[in-house]
Image: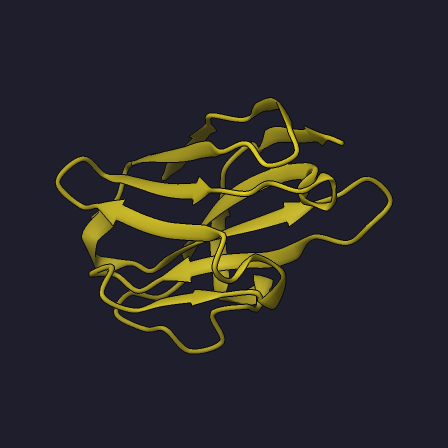
Length: 126
């Protein structure tokens, strides 16, 4: 299984970015997916998750109302639309795949995911 995250960059506060995570090597549509992020000097934290169909989504409080997670199972790709970006959103963003299919439990726990992308840097200037 390979996950390739892309779409990061340097933007100004208030701007938008869309991250993508392309998956290969497994039946993408059977697994929930998530985005995590890690800011400098901080632990990696949960950002957003989607169940295997995309019908159920979950968000961390700091990004609710600004970020939207989605997926296109036909393209084996997950997205994170990030609007109204803030300097505190600056981090390396990682996509991750659930360790077990057809489950959404403990979606915010890193231990629930077994495959991780390489990360894409998002930098928001004030």
